[in-house]
Length: 68
Image 1 (cartoon, rainbow, N blue to C red):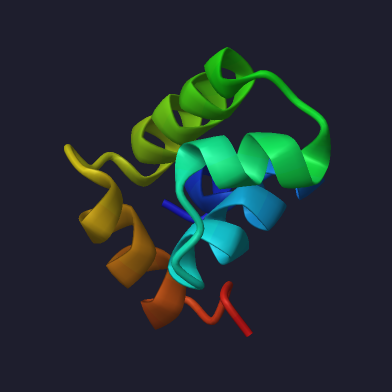
Image 2 (cartoon, rainbow, N blue to C red):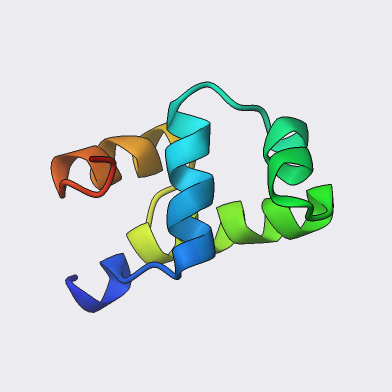
């Protein structure tokens, strides 16, 4: 499971911004990326954490100390 929790810097940034209440469109604007790029990154995060939704991804990240 440890390998699956390895996020790229971009994925970690997106995860942290999302945890602070940013919407995908806000994150895209903040990082000068397309909404599609944000969507793809969110999907990769869910896949790496082996979860079905982003709330579960946030809980997993928090429990592993990735949000601080």
